[in-house]
Length: 466
Ligand SMILES: Cc1cc2nc3c(=O)[nH]c(=O)nc-3n(C[C@H](O)[C@H](O)[C@H](O)COP(=O)(O)OP(=O)(O)OC[C@H]3O[C@@H](n4cnc5c(N)ncnc54)[C@H](O)[C@@H]3O)c2cc1C
Image (tube, rainbow, N blue to C red; front, side):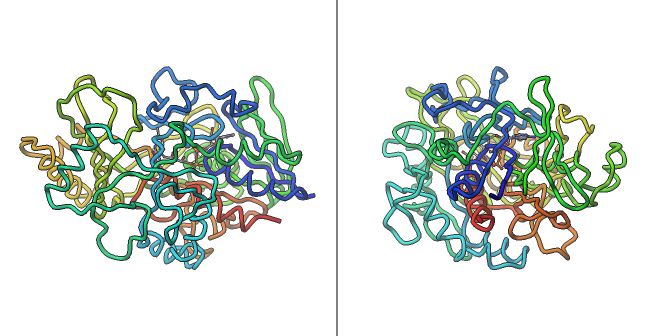
């Protein structure tokens, strides 16, 4: 029996564990740092409310990093606490991805059947390129909140096209238009990857999911991974496996590799970590910087998902949020989806309890600032807001993050000096070690990453099924 150890029961980990354990001859053990409830019925109700993002200072289910970055720390990972927006990137992003990794595996044509198999789209399930039998329920709001409706009316009045299906095929060229956001929700509940993938598989005798267990280091014998070291409360332990699939997310997957001696040589030496394999881990990453345009408005009358409509303007996404983040003020987010400046992840310490350092590189390129200024001007026109001059200081004062960090263990061919994993997620130079989460993304994508990370995990798991 082949044994696979999956690090992290987050968005990707849930998909990988469910797919691999479908084969009874394959033993799958998942180690998750956060809580794992024995059944879906035991998940605390507030975690299932898609109108509530449990990331405030009181939250016990997040990892926190400098710069206001958070990630989910529970079964389902960030997918269990996110905004439920479930949108596919346009075909052009897969063309760029496929070209960078020199493999047809990631072309739009190759990934489309995986997207379709993932979903039960209640609005477009029988349309070409869609699915009506997959695990993820997808729907668009039928009864938008006033703030969403007003935004849609303003977009239409300004001449923007309405796109009925934001998950439909978007060909090469501009992708402009506004529409209802496809959401991973069912019967008013957040349908995160734990509910859609892992819990339905949990009764399998060959699948074990253990919570409260942080993998601190990969165990390597020469250039082969043979298991992991972990900590659980005050306890420490070691688990061996035939292979390890790391799904700890864009921050913690990179941090785990670096702690294990796979990373930039100068960084490893400065941290006192013995070098196993020099690799560009953390040397590049990407995210979606977001400018918050605030304006006065009435309190919401009911709780709805955070985002019901979006306006796509090529590399910009405008987001009229339904909740109030500041009392009395509504917020329209202007996000830059393909920033020019990359970010960088490093560690300050080899101690796994010390959070990683992430420099997102936001607003460093004049091109990025110019695009965001253009987006803010469009937002001001739509809202009829007299914003005055939008200079760099104004942008900085209103800057936030979309929480979409990706690419710290970038995918690419073996001769690409920027690449950590190959197109199937296998770490170059280390046998038995794969990464299947958002850290392998090799290019910025023009939509939020949740649909993409499930796709990534499904494609990589298919390659690793025995
Ligand atoms: C607040 C918030 C809102 C968001 N909203 C949206 C949205 O609406 N739409 C969208 O498209 N995207 C959204 N995103 C982004 C999206 O949710 C994430 O990018 C995506 O879920 C990441 O998936 P992943 O599998 O790479 O990592 P994660 O889902 O973060 O999973 C990583 C898992 O690994 C575990 N782990 C980490 N380190 C270890 C370790 N050493 N040992 C054991 N376990 C470990 C973690 O606890 C976690 O469960 C949001 C993100 C956040 C934080």
